[in-house]
Image (cartoon, rainbow, N blue to C red; front, side, top):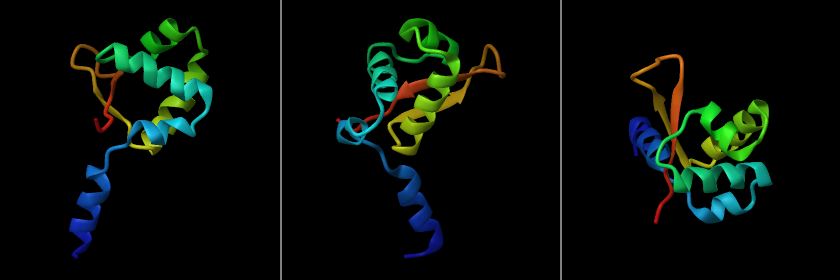
Length: 89
């Protein structure tokens, strides 16, 4: 297996709900909110969950480490990122 193939397998990995189960409660809450809302910004998540922005940022980082969210730049405002849940069914 070449280095590019191993990198491709690493980036193609998608998390599962089992990966979320071991995360802190804030990350679980953010995952559930993203499950019910297709895409959201960090501020929208903070408003919906009533969590501080810093806690939401930490939860998003933990979810990203487990490969269960997808993030992309917003076309309407390139300063913001849009987050969505990306869990294997």
